Length: 342
Image (tube, rainbow, N blue to C red; front, top):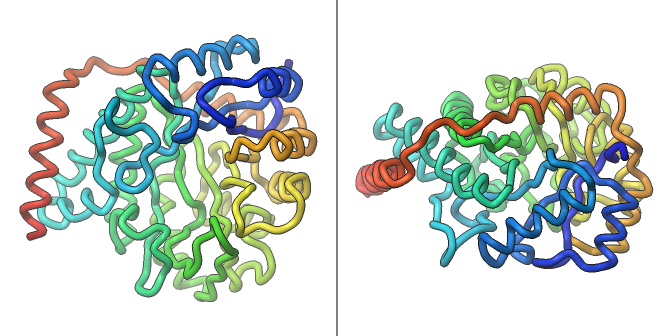
């Protein structure tokens, strides 16, 4: 069965009979896991294996948000804690090459954790550039406030992930850093002029345009589209994400169940896909909502199918890796950054 243009969550650590029937009928392109789905390495591996069996696919994209800091779905006691993005930025300010080495090493270690349990996609890196007065939803998840620095650290994290056989997702296109509201709760409105956005917010994404996967921001940029957030704005997706930034990878929406968006789940799905998103993302595991998204998502065809195939083709077999030595070096680098910031 041809996959449909959406990614879905699940309600818990095991697939329920109703979810099994849904997955078979709806054929999502991929799954996304959250803490509610995660108990242990063996449990995740079994969940992934069962999902592949249900969907009849050996190449099933399984996503997770594993950034470090506040956003880390796999954690103690089974997995280590990783630092927030700002920690790489602090080390970079002290010694740029060490900051980039730490970011790449961190990405590679995260990939090692994820690949071991069958997770193949990490919603990382972030290229958002926060400004003074912005909402704290990005906060210390960001690598800094200077676009060149942000792009360099993001690229290093992405390299580490890909070296470990995990695909990165660039977020949140074309930038969530100026948002004065949390898009999980309400719709942020950014009034900055286009030239300011192009020189800061959008500029951080341009060096990362070749990454295979990206995620939109539920943010209105009034100088470009006074009414619609990037996720559902054909103007922003066409002129900025595909145009100015030059991103040609598979573009997924941010979670359609977030409070920033209005309308039914079916309306949100159709609007995101009509605007130019290749894939609708729904995360909360509510089966009724999942069914509404699936009903509105078409089969994956045309340019969206091409981008999806290209993204999967970018995933490679992990390179040889001394896990223990890498973790020791990573810890030394992070300690150097902590000491430099005192």
